[in-house]
Length: 315
Ligand code: XMP
Image (cartoon, rainbow, N blue to C red; front, side, top):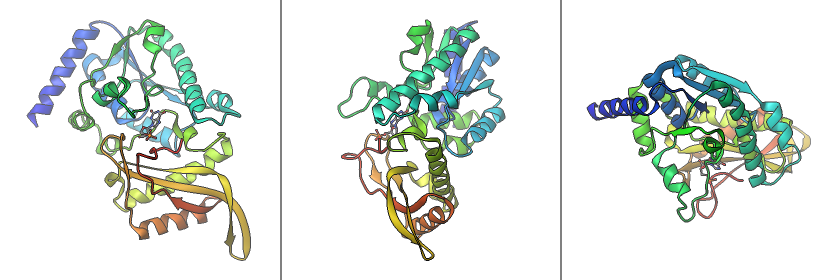
């Protein structure tokens, strides 16, 4: 596709013209946007780009290793900062969803700030897309969702200039650019994942043992979606750990354990969404695996709420 090729060339030139001899720093999350922005910039200015991957301890099972191997295969110059303990200690005792978001966002900035100072960069690269720009301009009903992901407020604080090469593009165009740059489809098709990570998928206080339960249940759900060829058919899918217990029976024994909710939605941009009509046989299979394999869960429910009036996430 010659048009995508032209667009890539145009972007490379634009980045070189902007940055000149300067250095650029970015936060990599493993998401499509930040990865495409980073690969593009790396192609334009080489190792004058430095990527920071903050492990906030709120990622999914195997995700740290998975995204690290992607970054390596893409030759991205990245540094991992393991800050799990810091994030989890800050979240201790906090139940309110917005408070959790703020804490994760603030802590992220704090961690990233140190890295940025050390790097001596002048530019902060962000994978902002056109819909993000529109959203933060205050479209009715839109929540300002990118405060963490796009490290809002950080550039001014550090005196960094913003580099946003994807700013006038939509997601499908970004995916096409990514494909042109040789980024594997598996990465380009990854579902969106919120900046605050699993902290907003454990309703109420985030405890380490609950993160483990949620990670196992979520992993089974996603693994089976991929096996059944359903992963790329839904816009986003995940498990949520509810703060309630219900009665069950395993063998002859009464159990009293936690409930997991599965959420899968069809959407084009996340602004509105419909619950995915996943096959009953599939849901049945996932339910059996989760209850049999995940200790601490004895009930699985499927969320059939649309957005609006519900949101995609539960918090
Ligand atoms: P909601 O729950 O608002 O989610 O319907 C819409 C989309 O945004 C993601 N989301 C977030 N992303 N930080 C993010 O980076 C957040 O605080 C946040 N909250 C929701 C959500 O996963 C969905 O894709």
